[in-house]
Length: 349
Image (cartoon, rainbow, N blue to C red; front, side, top):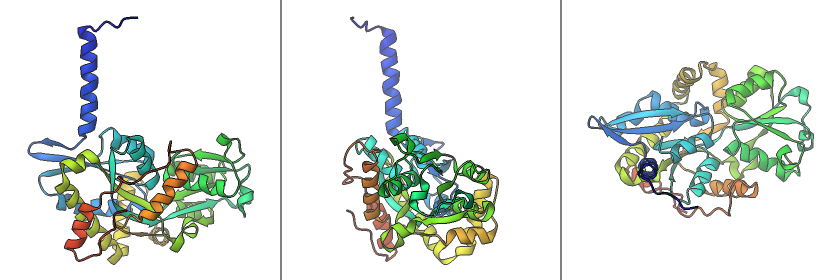
């Protein structure tokens, strides 16, 4: 059938092209002499650098008066990465698995990992009544995590695979229930799930508020107990257009990491106030301190653990091909900040 190239069709094609161009150009726009920069993050303790940096105004201060800093909050990484691919956010705090997936999905074009944010802070918590004492006890159980393809989802599925277990979507008998973190607390308390592989502070809340038991601290699965939980990524187009703003943002990020390391209780209080404003519920200070004891903050992205997480995602079928992360990192802006502060720089793989 011959396609009629009418003026109407030309208009549709033109609009479609403009839409793609706008997505490629992204969200950093100028209005009233200011550049709008949009930051993505989660209301999780593993994103404490974002929470504290926003609470103290450090990001806005270092970006300067000519920048209008906007924020978008997400439950899990895959949704945040889709927003980044659409140009809706410019910089994001996100887990390694969604970051790698977004990078490969875009043919290595959409984003760059520009720094680290946190390590650890993920527990596998089970209900006492579920009688889970060994990996084999997970058969015929329902286990929740925040979202399919997220960092915790990949970790849980990899753990099951390593112990000879299969999920129901792969013909096995372990059912994974992707659920928003806040809803996991309710399902756990009601006995509708048997366990959850979740980040802090939700893991500690399951323990303290719902009587959960720690089956596994994910740190025990990694050399030296360290693995990347949260990274800082930037849209490649934004990084190319505004390298000065990326550097300023990372200066604020390094300052915030140092502040948290030196002022733990004050930082936790600030993070708690942010979590309350975002979720409607703060945590008792003892619970928050307990949750933070399972993790630490760092601007080092721990690239070897990212590579391992990428390999696990490939083995599980989340990546179409063997991951090649050769171009995913850009530590130039971070190393510029670290050098200016007399700190050791991060090696580029």
